[in-house]
Amino acid sequence: MQQSAVPELAHTHTRPIHWLATATALAGVVALSSILQPDAATAAQGPDSKTGQATAPAPDPARADFPIECGPVKAVVVKKASGDLDGDGNPETVAVVHCDAPMGTPPDGLYVLTTADTGKPRVVATLVDPKDRTIVSDIALRDGAVLGNLLGYSASDVPRCCPDVKDSAKWQWKNGTFERSKPSGARSV
Image (cartoon, rainbow, N blue to C red; front, side):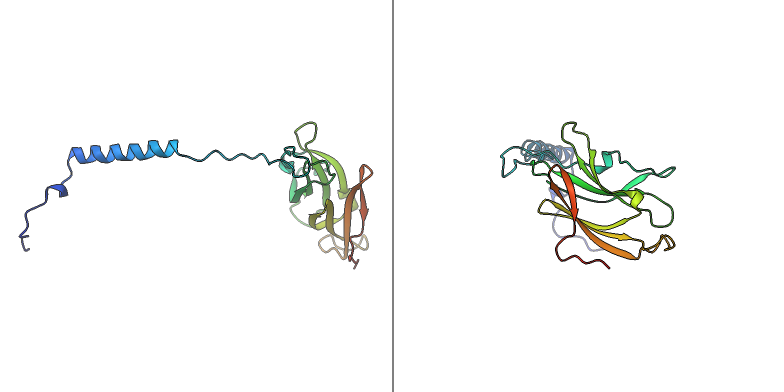
């Protein structure tokens, strides 16, 4: 091995003073970063553009009790959408719920939730009852209306795995209730 013609440099050997200087610099960076952090984010929504009042957060369907009987299995929320459906400036949540059945295609319930008055999500309307044996394949909220694509069965002997009827529905808040109609351009199959 060849020897270096240059003597060893003093700063290539770490000494306790180097570690102390590094620790002090690191502590200064950490202290400074904790002072210069941005404001904390909040989950509250800003004021409503129409009324100027703050709006409540949309109801969380995971915290709601749904009027669906599932026996030994639990009810699961499979789809959800939120928006102001009744024009009060506070959002409602529309949730598609069915029993977590191990096989087959369980029927869906389509529910409207609010947190008005209590702060806890509660069902205020049932748009599709699971007893109707309908599957809600898709939902959307547009212009204060709930739009849904529905699947069903033409006869009782049609296997529950394979719905053979398709339909579309629109629910709009009118006169204190959700009125069902056909969306424009919708066709039944």
